[in-house]
Length: 31
Image (cartoon, rainbow, N blue to C red; front, side, top):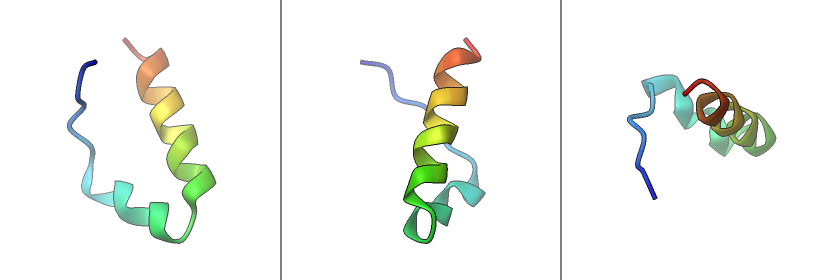
């Protein structure tokens, strides 16, 4: 499994966990 370097604003997962998963999805699709 590859690890991704996440941007600082990725910390919003504390307030918006669903948005966090969406970011992971977008990052995975942007390969």
